[in-house]
Length: 398
Ligand code: PHB
Image (cartoon, rainbow, N blue to C red; front, side, top):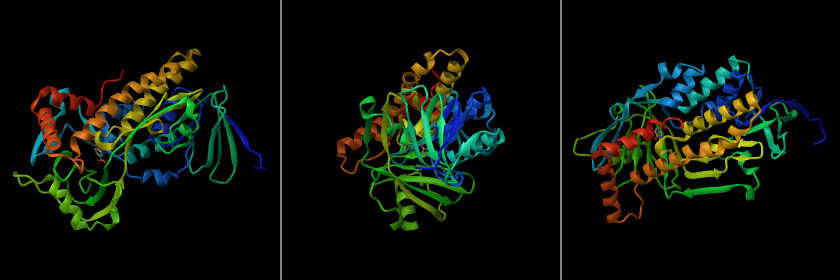
């Protein structure tokens, strides 16, 4: 306290400069709506944080058609299907054949890099490395963001609309009074052990494998680096695992009579990722609107997190744009309900993929056999496979 706060005025104040915040800022700026983004991490920390890597076709279109970047098309990899592997056998889910759509393997760090570059190119006001951020007066016509910038100067942003896109641990959701929100969540009795390895891809497409030893996901990054995960205990100590033990465990989960072998290489990153399913309802309090992980998180199995954040941003942008074009708050008032429809569909899909593919440590023989029955029902039925394909590649916008 003591030192003067500099007051900045803008139309939309955005807390959180990850993909959701930057995408919204980009769309608003294109529409001539003033906005300022504040982000507590520095650019380099966000750019090097590993997150999931699958983009729905709608997310790809959002990046390319709004002029963020075409790099996803040249640097990303188009995947027309995935492999579901269980009982030691592979079953291809052919997205193109089933629903006429594909996904792109393009890591979230690259999405951030593209968005950050686009904001810089267009002279957007994005302030990284801020601290002591608080949001106040949320239920008034002038909600405010208080923060200290990376040079230690104190600011106050007076805005008309405040957007919280500050992730699952962010301050915006927590600033909504407890009695004004419902926290819906479940915990899972497992986590993912994630690795990055310098090796060639083990297979052309992603493999989602179920085995008695638990789930494994054989994902990719590019021709030289691969991303893989296997189900582990949430309290597992990643650093205590040797490379050989990691490879043996991954291989055991994909072993089968077809003799499929993973291509091994040096492991240069290992982390345990804990996850839970969470939805804040509503995604609004006064003039504060939540978007992306700030309002909801999904387990990573369906690769929905980033896609859902971009879907929120699409709906929220249209609502804010309409508000400034017409001064009618109708779409803003409908934002939470509209975004939550997709959120709950994605919650169901992520929960379904997670529970179908993971094996609980205390599973009975009945539960194991039931799970295999469910998996074989999905791959043996065109309708079952098409449900998975449609959800994975992304539902049409509603
Ligand atoms: C990843 O490559 O990091 C990835 C891919 C698919 C998922 C989750 C993570 O479902």
